[in-house]
Length: 132
Image (cartoon, rainbow, N blue to C red; front, side, top):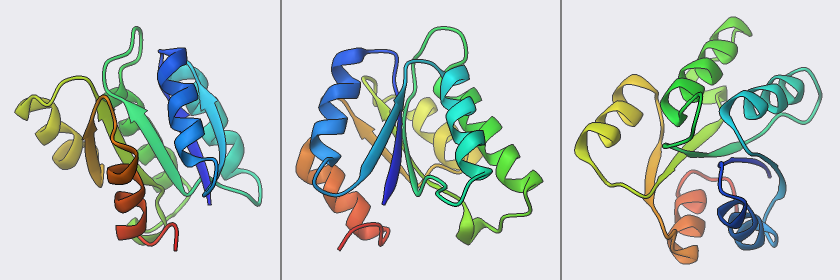
């Protein structure tokens, strides 16, 4: 599995990389813009990202805006919903508006609150068939 972590907090990025290290090859970005660049490059290669862990609250382009652009790139590439990356939103806030927006407007498949419980993250990835 290949996973992209997009989070403006370096501690969160390192923590998520450590949790995922036994299961995935990871790349990380410190902003929505740089995350989109990595995602775009992976789509143009033979090793696209299977999962994206995306922080909701970031300066500049937030997680919701980043997710809409990711889904737009996937649609433009002709991917079906089954072929899209599994996006897990990660937030310090569990606000219902953010959760609704992530699922219904962005097409996220999961919403985890910080601090992310490692077992919960791994269970979510198993649920979506990304790890055994």
